[in-house]
Length: 209
Length: 209
DNA sequence: GCTGTGCAGTAACAAAAGTTACACAGTATA
DNA sequence: TATACTGTGTAACTTTTGTTACTGCACAGC
Image 1 (cartoon, rainbow over the protein chains, first blue to last red):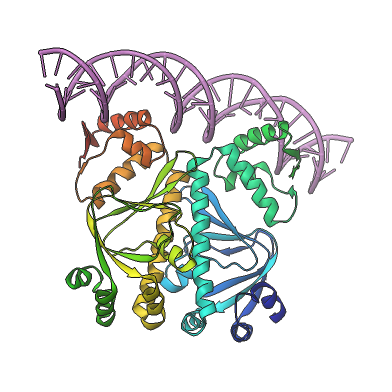
Image 2 (cartoon, chains in turn brown, red, purple, yellow):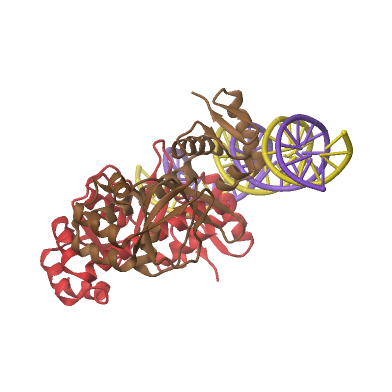
């Protein structure tokens, strides 16, 4: 665990803090599509993502849902911080995009470290800032972009977090994450294929270029 | 100033902290439509809102803009926090919705207090949480609601922060804040009037009920 | 009074997105 | 192999939103 932690957080935390983390944290492996946090759930531990990617999803009361952003190595979820510190229920759902590992920190420690380690405090603040930034991007997408642009952005993002030009999703799955219908996605994907930007196969989409 | 601070923050901060704030803060009055923060600006002081309301606006590269949320008495802007702590440029614009006053805290003090006062730390975190929450609402609006619902929500919000059933805005101004066109707003407002929800006058809209 | 300007109402049309329905091709399974 | 199921393509249509254009009204300044 120490090695993994150093790899992801060695530049962020001083070694004394890394030692403490190694002592108190427990590792949790997850696999693709595992539901890590559900809406309404109380969070008692703070997750540090060591590897893999997690998608953060917002849900509407009535069936709707939308992908907010992805977490990657070195990230933590500010929503979770919010829950831990504010003792409120989660407002989002976290689902594993692929397999990976998180280190779980007991909530008591994370508060203790806020006073003790400046690097921890910086980390927590920069996580908040990064999350606010991601939320702003999500808002930009929704407010200023049409569905075709949003779709292309989504495909690129997916490709990035999975480190592959091949996106292994059905049109229906994509439609859920963009909160639209399968027919709309099929239509726009076909247009992207006609423009030579992607290649469509059954169950996969290949990002060309 | 001390009285105003106690009124807005007396429950939040211990009296020692209030005293410190009184010592180092400078008061700034603003009037309706003052631009308090511009996009791209560096922030060197942290504002505590004593009274009045401020709207936080996100802009697109090309003409578009959208209202994110309002700040009210007792709020601070987490975006500003982000800028102060991260030393980055502002990603949003802040415009006075009506007249009011802010207390400006030098950035050095706000960092010092993070270690010194638990109530300050709690305040800073809860500001972040509140802002994340508001951003989530903004996303909900954009992702899940149609323009007519968004418009009605906007009118109610306006009415609330100005503490008046009378909304003194032109259709064009509303269109800007919802990132749509004047004609669309006029159309939807007329529909709301026909449903007996509002009354339209020149330059003002009255929320009935 | 007349005139210019900004605001609101509305029609007519265009574009984007959502909906329904159905065909068909791979794939899995009995 | 026959059958069922899942994923995709596409047409036809509706709804929502955006655009252009023109009207008339209210108000300010002359």
